[in-house]
Length: 394
Figure 1 (cartoon, rainbow, N blue to C red):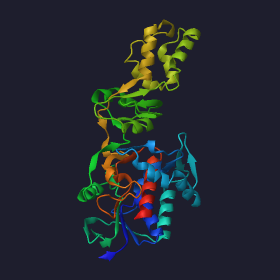
Figure 2 (cartoon, helix red, strand yellow; figure 1 turned 45 degrees about the horizontal axis):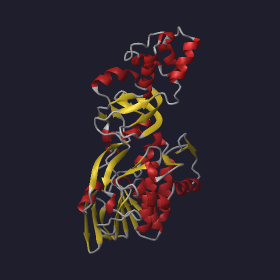
Figure 3 (cartoon, rainbow, N blue to C red; figure 1 turned 60 degrees about the vertical axis):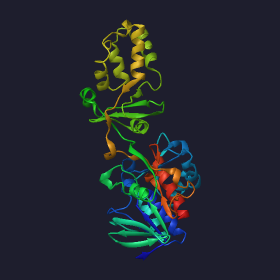
Figure 4 (cartoon, rainbow, N blue to C red; figure 1 turned 120 degrees about the vertical axis):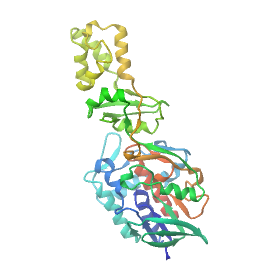
């Protein structure tokens, strides 16, 4: 067997960061990737521009069974540390409205930066390495793979979750965790579009591509103010992706399309200035016409002149647009999900080092853990942080 100090399995964001930091400390480090190329999720993130972090990153931006777990990693490697690394490589970036940071050019800039750091660190990357067996013998880990067999003191599992199987996602990391006695909490798709029920599809499929600002609110009261998007299959957009991580089967999601509370004010102004104006014509000035044409069929007074609206009808109008209810049939699942909810129970993993409390020398980093960030750079920030922390300690 080839002997090294550290083997990292999975060359995504977390695995790359971990291998870089480990090798920088003088540890002989090997990074194994079962695909042809490393960092494939990095390349598709942010529409190909990689939303690599956010200006404001707090532990509250993450979902985890152990709500304090992420604090340690984020404290040891902040968004400012990663932004500094980006600046060192002269990568141009820009900030979106909610503080999300994207590459000006391409996600390839971030991946090339990490590969350059990996090369300079002295770590070795082997691709198309399918791991067939892992065992622990004499305080060391033995790894059998299609590209050779290795023994190491520290083994890092950075294989990600189940989302986007076309990019190589597999349950491998969860199986290894269970092999070494760890509990894997139930998994499901997160940051994922919702799908229509048949009746909804008949109503809204025709307005695929229509997008509107909204406040999406889940059954537990969690809300996000961003855009939603109608698609051929259901509803998507940033607000929907965010709220999907808080949605449970058979629950409704409420969409408030009157985000600035100006709808009734506009109606009352028109009542004074243009009382003969039909309500439907006023609403098409505020919302996409195709959306209003469908909603007009759901409320029977859209064809009325504004001056003829009753107080009850005005209240119904406000309630309709401020609390537009949508009960999904389900989600699009792991095929399009950006993250996997659930994963390795963090109660049995050190928050300071990412090392297993059950099997010394075994580490878990990135999405394989029960940690999920919000949309817009938070998931990558967790990957950078957890990879950095483990790399410093493995």
